[in-house]
Every structure is written in structure tokens, then in C-alpha cells.
Length: 316
Image 1 (cartoon, rainbow, N blue to C red):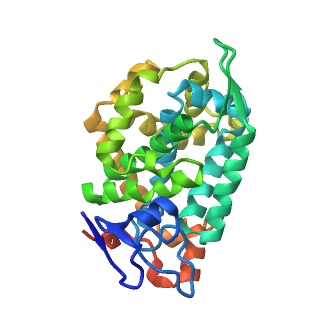
Image 2: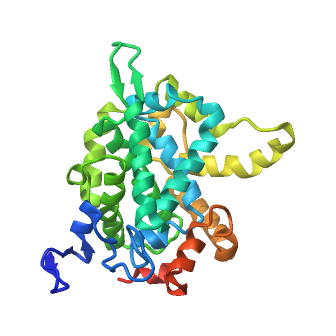
């Protein structure tokens, strides 16, 4: 269903409550707000993205995304051939977190500049298929699309399964909002899934291309046993292994088959995710948001206390 709004702007169209032109073109915050004294950025305080991305379970979702993304041989090869993954994996996760934080809570200018940096880096990188000798760019649309969809699916999946109050309508809005982030990394938004049905169809289409090779095995090994200072090994076993195990277990069954490692029963995984989510959400939000680079607090300072992310602001 489409409707026009804001009579002074006949080109402003809202689709099921989300401004689709803004999402595809990045001209306005996708939550429909206009820029006032404080710049709400590309999403805005009324978006689903604004609420979800402030939740601590996003860290578990980020690890799931790494497991999922590694299932595409060409995509993971592009990562492994252009970095020392075992030394840079944590840094990669932190850079992804910073990119997501900047594009979600930063100003429009900061978000656009972050996207431009990513596109510039991707344009300079390539990988070689060891079987055919083919050299290809890591910014091929099919590879960018896989990375995007695996990431967005992981964020939604973990948040819903860990007890965050997301309805099907919220999920569709979230996916549609991220046509913006797809554009930022160099994708044509018109070629990107815009709802759950399209996302599901995409995964079914790409599934025959997925496989676990040497590169994916290396990612799996790192995520299970990252290099750690001997004094920190106990902490790794208690904290990191739990996150890694939950992230892996939450993957779809076909991913477990490809990796060749079993996971706990789905009902058990859901209970564990809910318990972990409940535990992390008991940590006061302002305390969690104090961690650098303080994206949420900086956005609240810019826009006022009414911009504070909270589940109840999702609405219907």
C-alpha cells in the first residue's frame, strides 16, 4: 500500500509506513522525519533500526553474521586473501560495529562518508579463484549482496530469537530500511530484498552456491578458538566460547550441515539466547553505551533525550 504525505512535497512517498524513496535514495531519514536543528542521520529515532541497533545482543548477531558470510566461497576468499584474518578478525568485527553505529546514529554526512570509504576500499581489492585462476573484484554486486543479506538476516534473527519484541511488520520495515545501507556499500537498492519474503527467496536462490572450503574452515576455527594471551584463556572459555557457540547454533540447519558440526536442538538454542539476552539487557543501557565510540550517547546529545532507543518505541 502506498500513500502520499507531506503535501508540500509531492515526491515524498511512504510505503507501509516507511518512506521508500528515502530508503532507496538516501535523501531523508527513513523514519519520515525531517532534519531540524539536529541531524537525525539516515535512519532517524523513529526507525526500527534505531531501536534494534542499541541492543547488546547485536554482538552475538555480529558473530553469527561472520559464520554465515563465510559460507560463500568467493566472498570469504576476498576477505582471506586481503587480510590476515587470524590477526585482524577482532578488528574487522570492531570496524563493522563502528560502521553500523556511524550509519545508524551518526549524522547524514558522517554516514555518507563512511559509505564512501567502504566503497573506495572495496574498489581497490580483488581475489583469485585458486581453481580457475580468475581474478575478481570484492565489490562484485553478487558478493556485496550476499554479505549484506547475511548481515541483516543475522541481526534480525538473533534479536527476535533472544526476546526483543519484533513483529513481522517490524521485521519487514527493518529489511526495507536497510536499502539505505545497501546503497552505502555500493549496491543498487532496487536489486536488494526489501521484505522477509524477498529475503527468504534470495537465500533459497543462492543456497546452491554455498560451500565450506579452507577459508571458511579458518573462520570457523578462529571464531571457536581465537588467539588469546595465556592469562586470558579462562575468560575466553567462559565468555567468548558461549557467544561463539550461540551464534553458530543459531545458523540455519543447512549451514550446520555445510560446516559439518552439529548444534543444539533449536528449542534449546532459543532458550539460551533468551537467557543470554535477558542477562545482557539487565546491564543499564547508559552504562553499555559508554563504551567507545559512544554512538548512541552522541546521537542523544545531538537530538535530545527523546531520541533514546527503546523497544517500546517500535509501535505497531
